[in-house]
Amino acid sequence: MIQKAIFAGGCFWCMVKPFHKYSGVLQVVSGYTGGWKEYPTYREVCSGTTGHLEAVEITFDDQIISYMTLLDIFWQQIDPTDDGGQFNDRGSSYLTAIFYTSNKQKEMAETSRDILNSSGRFPHPIVTKVLPATAFYPAEEEHQDFYQKHPEYYSGYRRASGRAGYLERFWSAKKPNIDHLTPLQKSIAIDGATEPPYQNAYWNHFAKGLYVDVIDGTPLFVSDDKFDDGHGWPSFSRPVNHELIIEKLDLSHNLNRIEVRSRDSNAHLGHVFDDGPLEMGGRRYCINSAALRFIPYERLDLEGYKEYKVLFK
Image (cartoon, rainbow, N blue to C red; front, side, top):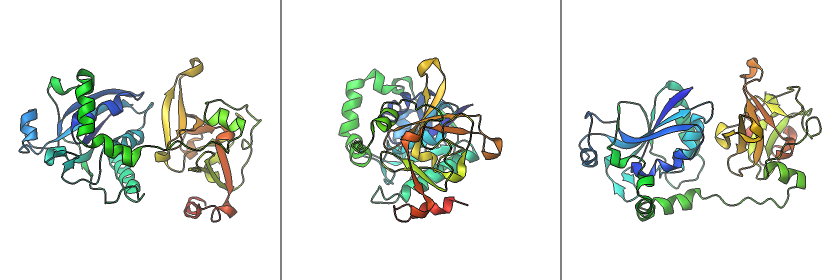
């Protein structure tokens, strides 16, 4: 289904490129929203007299890229704790906000914000507002795809404004340690291979417990959501937290599939399909055993996963 997502993240010049590179993103338009003046100009919005924020309107196919993934990308482009603008750009038109187009988007945006707020990543509370979408007015043509039209100026501005340095400090990922992986685990998680069906550790394993990322221990799936799909690989109806995985289009082997990766380690996990049990939501996360480590329910406290006990019946 084709949907729209609207994000205000300060200067819209810097908010187009991060979304453009993802499969499923069909269009990213720079513009103005949230105010009261119809068809405002760039100069009027920058004056702070229109009530509008600089924003981007993203048209996307939610069968290829999810709204939760777009939210995750959005957070990693901004300082969500700044209530006076963004970086060197000050004033109301540079405030951050998420404009939802449906109640479902509202719920996901608020959940995403609250999880990030409680993560301890930032030294101050998140102030980014979640607001109902209003009229969106595309900006003048000179502001569209600015990073493509003026690549050198864009790169210099992004760094000089303080945005690039801030994002590097708070979001740059450290390369995960993979020294503990076996050759099989490396071939699956790092190289993206697929293990044979019925010849892997967890395809018929139904003990009570938590399945975590074999690289960094991120909690991914629980046994309560596991089912036998008859294909010979571990299958789950949902992840522990959709924010901890990334779903992306995979056209390899002349197939059209949605790959599943662990967000922080970037480990290849498997693929997700829409042929799961309807009573469990209809999705089937078909995951490689070698990308997972199983922690029995009885050991969750000992291994630091006590808070995940609430996920079990």
